Image 1 (tube, rainbow, N blue to C red):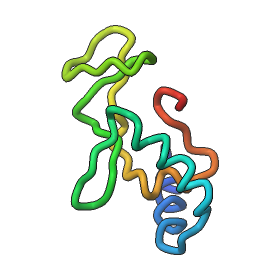
Image 2: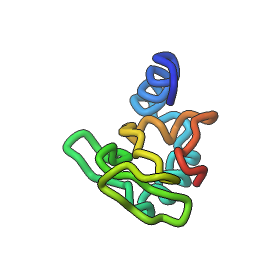
Image 3: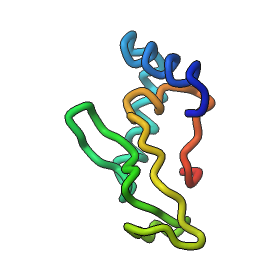
Amino acid sequence: MGSILDIINGHVNEALNGNEDLFERRLSICKKCPLYKETALGPICNPKLYIDNNNNISTTKKEGFVKGCGCRLNAKTRVTYSKCIINK
């Protein structure tokens, strides 16, 4: 999610159960990712970890690794044009 409008759109969809099929399909992919983290506010893409395209994880920044975005997945996965940081 990039702009504030994207974030608002995701939260509105979450509150109204919008894009439920898309949400379920995407969240099932997220749950298999090492960056998936359950929190009190729901699942997030763990911003304390880094990942590469081969699902290798690091706790420090390394070449070829990207940082978890920190997004609340219950909202992000409902926005049709949102993208995973590693294109999953």
